[in-house]
Amino acid sequence: MMRFADVIGHKNIIANLQSAIESERVNSGYIFCGPSGVGKNMTLRAFAATLLCEKSGIDSCGECHSCKMIEAGTHPDFTELVLEKAEIPVSQMREFCREAGIKPVHSKRRVCIIPEADKMNDASANCFLKTLEEPPGATVILLRGESTDRMLKTIVSRCQAIRLGPLKNEEVASFLLRENKTQSEEQAKELSIISEGSIGKAVSLSEGEAAEDWRWLKEILGNFTPAKSLVLADGLVERLSSKGNDSSSKRIRALELLDAMALLFRLRIKQNRSVRKSLAAIDLLWQASERIDRNVSPDLVLQSLSLNLVYR
Ligand SMILES: [Zn+2]
Image (cartoon, rainbow, N blue to C red; front, side, top):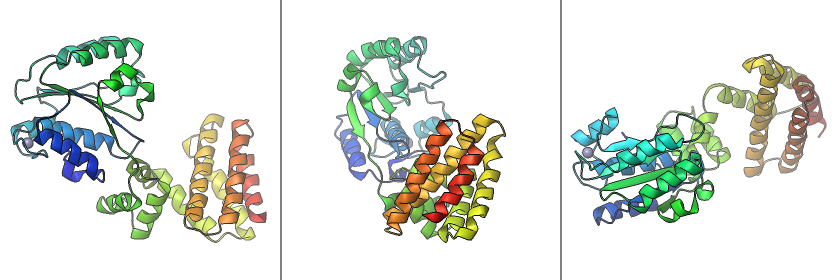
């Protein structure tokens, strides 16, 4: 269940949305935009649940029939356009707009959401625009997208934009600790610095292979000596095949490893540690990515990178 109380950060934005609910000045359209992983989805869903909640408070209660139905995905006054293809086809948009026009049957409003609003093509955007131009009285439409640049200006101008910026490092770190995504406070702090205000990015770096890479690279690059260059080269080559042995899987994997190394050196720069060496290392990593793009064998690129890192 999404509640405003559970959203990390964005206190002013939430206060504004709550005051609109309290004073009955809710618009018919909103666009939630901002970089990925900062909480657009959570904020939008908390807003939707609050608009439908039977308690009519400034946050959803999580307990009433309406809240339970949202959780179960069975609320009759809640419509979500689920993306089935790379872009939203006009047929799907037509059906969405038809539903948006139906009077609410349970709550006092109908809430309709389009979570990937930047995936409308021209036809579906124009179809949607008609609904926005003559919004059905009790319907609130919530759009979500990284930026409004890829949306029709006429759609953007008819909605209130809710712009969510990057979170503060402390907010990301406290989320990671609260959700047990990291093993230590130090790790939470590091991830919050390199994820640049995106919980989504921090979480993806704290799980699975990315977390493994991070742990290993930190250990080997932490106190890097010439003697370790061969260990680094062998380790990198070994990790290259984890997604498959064909050349395209290896290339993708090589770029992942180079990215992970770049993050590590960027972290050092942000922490004001070995700044000159780290900048030189990032330069080498950048050259290595270029060589991968030019189809040089990933094994060769990573091996020569490991040796070059030493002499800088
Ligand atoms: Zn409720």
